[in-house]
Structure formats: structure tokens, C-alpha cells
Image (tube, rainbow over all chains, first blue to last red; front, top):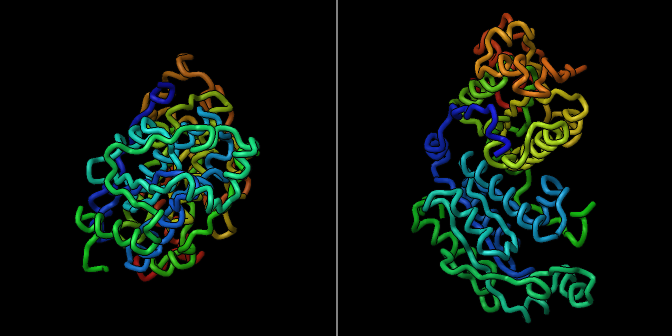
Length: 204
Length: 204
């Protein structure tokens, strides 16, 4: 690997465990995957607000936001989408190392890409949340008008239209937003994070 | 720009101001620049430990560490070094947005690259610290044996040997580690951050 040349790994002076003790909660990556319009970013933002209100250090990494900065050099080809997800996984790893609960909302259609990210984390650090919503419902919502453009052929390789979506085989949680609204969805995630002892129940 | 196609900026539900209120300190990027062996990472780690002990949320982004993950795909050509610094600046921006004091320790030899990063931040968010040390002293320390390799021609484009270092014109602070040891260097940075009202003096 190019970067392994002449590098020394600097041990961080402050450990992840020490950060968890300061924060009074553990760190984790909550990864939202699903079709455009399924509600990933909305649920992630609401989860973030709930965690913040409870004094928990959390942050949202959002496909759209990250693409304006870190990944502004990437387009939407298969290779660029893969690199987009790879970088987000690595940034999330830094945030988890820093003690955060990171909510990452990305279509992330390919199982292999998501599994690469899962393997960056410990077993109680990665939570894959499938935000499940029928293509029909997502198209009906079409909050950014993207499905309309994709159907007109103005966007190529659009997940669900001209590019496949591979659902998770063993997600930590499935949220069916055909029927579930935002707040109950957030409650389900909080319940999961409490059950897995990532965040303390007393804050909620 | 490739990435601006069909993107909507999701406003983060929790603002930087709200995070500062929770944390009881502001967020900032402390950027350490200087030759290999000048002491950038060591000072950054010690600063981080001092901030952590004071209950301040801080994190170190380190050239060597980032290169094992996010930037593992990059080598050491001029273009790759520039991209390395660009990505670190963007990751630091996410961390600052999340409320952290980020210490970034990178040789970052080119003024233009550092100025690009400065321009990502507000006037009280970016602190450029020149870790100044004579080439002779850095070569004598040579903690990773890199100067020896560079002088033998085993490493090309090595800053100070076969590639230039452009010192900052108006750094927020200069630390001359020919004479200054780690703890007094950290004190100078803390004093600066307190004077600029990034961190409260009562914590120290």
C-alpha cells in the first residue's frame, strides 16, 4: 500500500475508553442505508437532535453534505460512489475514535461496500439500519425531484431505477418507513442503542 | 463541480453554537506545520491530553494516522500530498462543525495548501502554529530515520532535503523547538486559545 511507506503509527495520548468515560456514553456508527427518499437523512437528523438534547455527543455524516466538501472531487460513477462510501467509513472511524455516536445516512446500495465499513469497527460499534421503503412510495415522495430526472434519463446509474439496491442480509434494525413515521423510528434506534449499552437509559 | 449535481444541503438539526453551549467551549482547528522531526505530533498529542484532562473535547488528526485509513490510497507525489492535505482540511471542518478542538499535525510544506484550509474556517477558528526547528536539529533527531533515507536517495521529494518548505508568513504562533520543550510549547498554545476565548481559562 502506497501510504505504508515510512510511516510510524502515533499512539493517541487519549484512548477511546478515556473518551467514553468523559462523555459517559460509548461511541458507535449508526449506518442508514436505503433508497433515495426513504427517509435516511431525516431520521438521522432527528436521532442526532434527540441524542444532543440528552447530552450525548453525536454527529451526522450525510451523503449530500460530505459531497460538498471532502468528496467534492467525486462524481457518481460506480468507482466514485465506492470511494465516496469508503471515505465516509474512514471519517466515521475517526469520529468513533473521538467518542462520537455518528449517524451516517447514505444510499450505500452495495452490500460489499457496507461490509467493508462494518469490518472497520468492533461488534458493538456498528449498527446497520435498513431504512426500507417501497420504490413506489419513494418515487411518490421524490423530495428532490431526482426520480423524475432519473426516469427521464437525465441521471444515470440512479439507485432503484437504473442501478441496483442490495438490501442488508442481517441489519441490526429495519425501519419500514412506508408505515413508520420519524419519531417512532428514532425511538426504535434509541431503544437498540440502550439495549446494547451504547448510551445510558437514564438520559431518556 | 461533479458533486454539485442534484444535491440538496441538509441543514444540520443541531447548530455549531448549540454544540459549543453543550461543550462549554468553542471549536477550532489548530494546524501544526513544520519539518519532519520538528515536534508537531508530539506537541499535538500533549495538547490533546491537556485539553482532555480539562474536560474539553479535542482530537488529533495526524499525518501518519490519517494515511493508514482515509488517505491510504495516496502516495507522496506533489498531487497526492496536496490531496492528503485537502482531505484533512475537510475532515477537520467536520470535526470543528461537531464542536471539537482539532489538532492537525502535518508537514504541510506549501503555503497555498495551508491557505486553502485557512479559508475553510472563520477568523477565530483556525490557528496556524509554525513548529520551527532547524533542519540540522531535525536531522540530528531523525526519530523515524527518514532523513537518513532521504539523504541516501531512498525517499524522493522529502521536505527539507529534496522538496521545499514554505514557512507561514503570518502564523498565529511560532514555537521554536530548537530551544522550547514540549510542556512550555503546550502552555503557549493554551494561552493563545484562552486569549482568543476558544477555551475557558477556569479549566486550567
